[in-house]
Length: 285
Image (tube, rainbow, N blue to C red; front, side, top):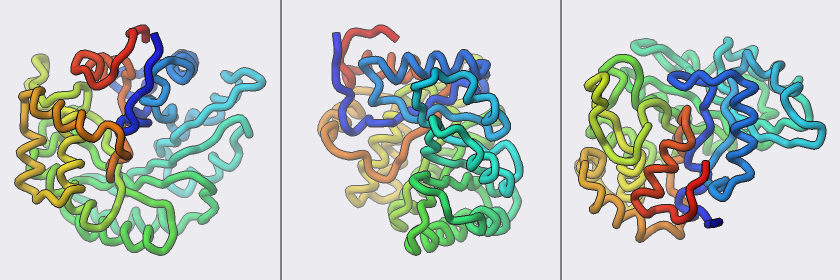
């Protein structure tokens, strides 16, 4: 049975299959992405995320008449990103470029200046600057907001998880970032830790993970003028009934602020959405 993914969930989940913890080999990831993009839930799926160092391996994996949209994730120094991108096969459309501008504890302004100083010929690609949720964050957001106001297609990216407890922001910390982006009219992406719809504790690590439906509801609340405390309360909620009802009411609208998140599995978030009744249809992924 076919179904249409609600507008609110359009391109919510970027395909990060090649990244940990999935770490799928690129040929397998391309084949799986091809299936996702031709499935009934295709509208849920964003571009295939590919490390910059793997770009030259991609063309030989495509059919002659195939077209693919990708996000280039910078695992090489920032100045090398654009020469790699410009050498790509015409069958490949770069939808976004993502690069970390600083490590935790470093001043992000130096990396932002380097990223903003690259040639402006990004065509129709969005550029996401990954900013640590530490010292210098608000000043970095101000810089991005100014660059965006000048016409550059730049936005922010934040980590919401990882291999250490400090990489998981608290609900208040994440709410403050969401509201800060709202105040600056600055879109953002999230990455890591968003494996399931509702906030939960991972039984293997003991880390508390944010739920992507929590984030969705929190973003909606921020867009409606909610304060940090209001958004944090929604991010911390573990009762799916309240969260699901709020999402249902806005399913036909565009998703404000939040560009989406990368997941090494498309099936996991899709399964949660079906179980919660936010996506209807025969499940065959």
